Picture 1 (tube, helix red, strand yellow):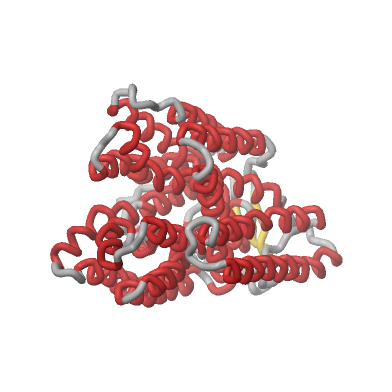
Picture 2 (cartoon, helix red, strand yellow; picture 1 turned 135 degrees about the vertical axis):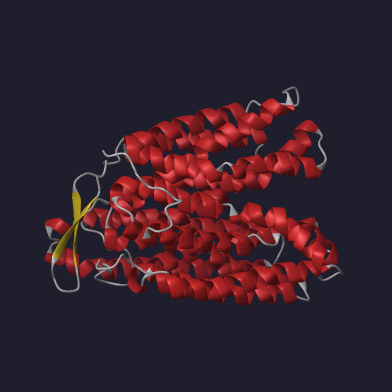
Length: 489
């Protein structure tokens, strides 16, 4: 395999300009999505919120992202990333402004729920980068896109409190959050103006059928349906977590109604998947159109334990440092931020390793490092030197985030015309993993929490043994009926 030659500073190259356009778009979506987090103390005081209400807002912020990533993935494949990303950025400004203008807790909750949709922006760039970069570079390019863009949440944490202070007054936090909406809207216009779906002269391949992911065998259809179930299970977990027996955001009747809606949504999606695939499976699938859904399922699990654990650990790590080492919350938050900070180099590093040494081997090695990292974190006690504990968390986070880069180094190489939908499902599993791990944390201590993640990663490592290394070419048919071969390894 040739060594990647990607140079992010070569701005004269159209694909490099597109890469920068894309990661900045992702950066802004994350900045908008997590704009409330560094200002939550001020918001809590302004609305006199209880700790349970604050926890509910944090859960609501990620709830819609699970189905949104699946929906956005389908829209990307059908309408193209340029249009979908541009419109998503512009629409994100509306709930952002509404949150900034909220006058009650109910309004905060509803707008925070709606803002979860912007978290699906990540999926758009996966298809876009896959269109512009060849297989020998796509892992590093996707890693730069994911790692640099993901830093938007950390940038919000570092800058928005200062922005709120500069605005001044009791409404400084409102102006700071609204400012991120203005940035998103304006950049959406820029993205529509400057981005292109494919390099000049290249075809953009679309799914033959809309509504659900196309599979290529009856066995894969049942496999796809089975792998869809945990995503709806995660939504039911969120409803339970917010319900009368936990955070008490609503009563028994509302909980039953929402649970029934999720079950109904699952049934509709299952029927759509059956409808979309029934006819073409009955007719037989041409050999050039075949791909193994096993590849998608394994990457689902890998992203569940990488990105899912990252979201969960980032949520609990400041309090973990506070309680374990008796630190002030500000210092604990600063030390914990090192975990997320590793994204800048770790995700690109995982993508580069995949390009250089192979997708399957790199992912397996990074999962071994992840397991070892969480085993070490499970042993941290107050008797540890603080510096050693911080280094352990940063070392663990490297393998976690490099693993994320390795996952999405493989996603664009499975089936080009379905990349958005595959990325959407894999991304949704990451959010579902966060819900699962955070739910586990409510029942166990911190040490056991880290051990559970390590155990889940060990199961995933076994599954990765069955991952097929992308080799040769995949075939797609353009709008003129011509078969085109796309190199994948």
